[in-house]
Image (tube, rainbow, N blue to C red):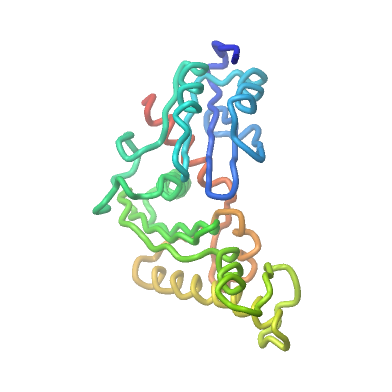
Length: 251
């Protein structure tokens, strides 16, 4: 049995980002991120511990995977104000996408987080997670869509899984311009392929739309130093965007 609490901290929000491979929980006071956690699993017990300690007044959940209805019921019962981010929730951006109901809510949150930091600028938002997503937002606050490709972990796993003899690797290790054995050939092929892919997108969008480029996601800081184009890395962009969306409901 869970003890239902009635939090008293009217300035604090709890933000929950349930991604494909990781969970993040963050506490915001207005626009300031004051604490973040990355539990191995998202359970009512974990959330109740955080809520009991910090007593947030409102919360929002963004789930890439199928949402657990019991988890949403728990949050709705323990928080005075709770939202699950979906395509029906009002947003501080206009969504110009043919199938908004299929649009990943983490992509929306990252776009909102970028626009909140750089309003009145065209934006290219790159999220380096399980998948690599690129999304374009106009200076007028219109989300125009974007592209999806496999992230580094998926590329390494695919080479291993769909071949007979290629080993399973990751980005850690020697990264020569030209691979001198099978391991370096795979590592350099995957990493350099991603770098060239992203640099070409950034160059194109800067030339056509004079974009300000954001980079976020679990692999963002690794790739930030390898890209030749100027880009701003913010590992908390999705969390910041979710906080903006939550505040927007109250406004």
